[in-house]
Image 1: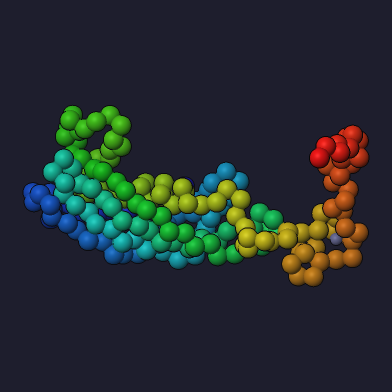
Image 2: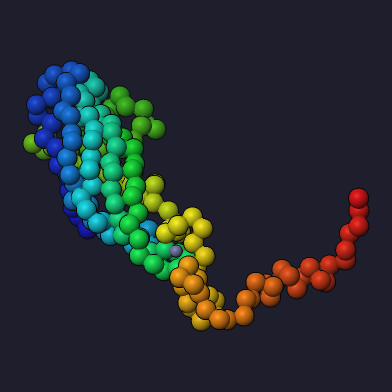
Length: 179
Ligand SMILES: [Zn+2]
Ligand SMILES: [Zn+2]
């Protein structure tokens, strides 16, 4: 991942308990690498969230909607994958975190009263991205013999399904006629 940022100036709400900055904006996202999968953004993500002065700090709550180019793990076809993720963040001024319970995840308000939402956005999206993307739930994949795309009519190869190691194993096991 690169070092892109998404900065929000929180000065307008910093002195005003309960004040909200509503966000409704496009965010340029970097490519997200997850294991062996790479998800390239097809368009800017769309973020809708409220940034609220909660007294203890600044709370960010909303969602991001994004679209990535993914590669189907069965047929290797590229397809657009749409993802919506809930975004939550809690930011405090450096030094203001003494009373915060340890289990609360905290980010810091940067000098000049900016918060950087990029880390929250990316970790929210990563939670929603699949480890094995499928272009369709029932994607038949490719022929294991010749590599033809089975969804597009396939090939003339002999079916290999009966030759699975489990089929052979079944013949070795004693039949149980328990009824
Ligand atoms: Zn597929
Ligand atoms: Zn084939």
